[in-house]
Amino acid sequence: MTAINLADFYRTANLSPSHEIITLRTEPVKKAAAQITGEQSVDLVRYYYGLPRAQEATWLPELFRESDASFSLIENEREAAVLAAAILATSIGSGSPRPAVAVLAGSGGGLRAPLVCPQVVGQARDTLVSDAIERRNGALPDVRSIKAPGRTKTGASAAAAVVAQDWAKAGETLKLVSDENVKNIEALVSQTVSILTPLTSAIKELREEVQILWWHIGGWSRDLQKPFAEFPAETAAMLAGIDIAELSDAVRPPASSLVLLEKTLALGRETVPADCTFESAVMGLSVDQLAAIDLPASLTGIVDLCPIHTALLKAREIGGNGAWHQAFTKSTGLEPTAALSPICFAMQALRERLLTYCI
Image 1 (cartoon, rainbow, N blue to C red):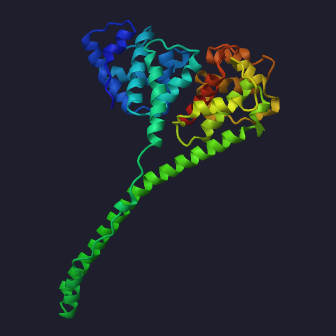
Image 2 (image 1 turned 90 degrees about the vertical axis):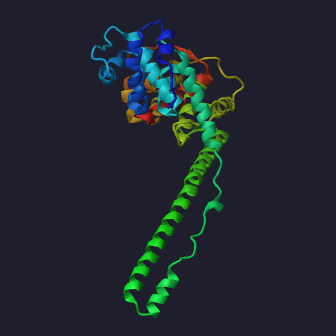
Image 3 (image 1 turned 180 degrees about the vertical axis):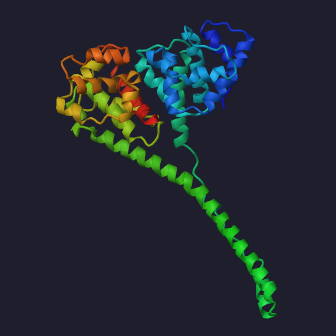
């Protein structure tokens, strides 16, 4: 597990706890990072960004009370954010993609600033890209490393015992032959599995890349069965981001996702607007199209971290013409007119959809 200096996290937040306090906090941080779940990643991200629902995560203060009975997060929002950031950074540094996805989705494409330690956002972004590249560039195994079992050394002894009618000796020898064959078969299976496992992963990654490439060439929305060029650019950005997430076989999307989204948005358009808003993206859909977009059931538990999906959900539930705006702002803390660049908007949609798969 990647080691962090908890004192540096406190220092970044302009907090100066004693050495004893830092020592008491360090082990719980390591413990939480080593076994973090998707749901806990969401809880930590809420503390990190100072979102209202953070207080629902009672497991975090309980974790630190195991080593410090006086620990409390009441009126201690800044330390809570520091500890959340430290746990997230440790887990991300150890290669876990779920916390990284949660941090990026929670940022709202940059519309939200964390309370402390903004470097964790950059770490999450860089780690997802580097891990995606490393996962797809792994060396393939050499099938020639599978070796055939050697000839049995006890067969001749068994034959000699039978000729001599020494049935006790023959029985013992046959058991040795059987045991030897079992070991040989187990060794062969183990060798075969060690070769097939990475090959299977490579085939899945190749299939993912081919599917995404054909999707890009077609320029067609999977949910709405219509060319992206026939939607407003804001709506197309949202739909394209969701599509790439659905086409990805892992929580780590291809490192080329940003480039593919940018090129997909440019298909059939002379210009792409400088900004996209939640309001304009939803306005590009009819009532029937809103109903046709698949929204994962897990979205209802993370509406505060998924503003694009929440805009779709509220517009579907309440109706268009601005009726959903107030409910959207209440759920996310963001304004429906908040603007992002088209590519940031598409990447935000992608990360939100991936987050719904993490919990």
